[in-house]
Length: 153
Image (cartoon, rainbow, N blue to C red; front, side, top):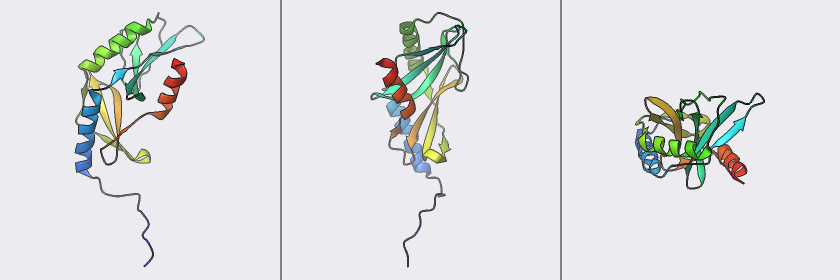
C-alpha cells in the first residue's frame, strides 16, 4: 500500500483551541507597547500604529487615534492632522494593554494554520494574537517585526 497523502482538511481539535486561548492569555501578560510607527502623508496627516511586542517580536499593531488619544478599532486606521508625541502614545498604549482583555474565543485562519484570539479594550477589538494550530506557540507578525526593526534603527 502506498504512503498516504496528508489531507489539508481535518476536524478541528477543540482541546487545541482551549490550549491556544490559555497560551494567548499567558503570553499576553508579557506584551509591551513598542516604539510607535508614525507615518506622514503628503498633506501633513499622520497615521500612528503601535506594535505590540512579545520576546522581541511584534505580535500585532494597534491603530492609534491622536485626536481621541486612544486606540482605534482593528481595521480602522486613523489619518489625522495632529501632533504626535511618541512617548505619550507609547505610555497610553501601555495603559491600554493593562486594561484590555483576551477574549475567550477564536477564529481559525487556514492559510496559516493558526488560531486567532481577539483582544478587546473598551468594547472594541484592538488586536489579535495568532497561536499555532496545536495551541502551543505564539506566531509573530514577521512582516511587522521586520518593519519595527527597520524603523527603530
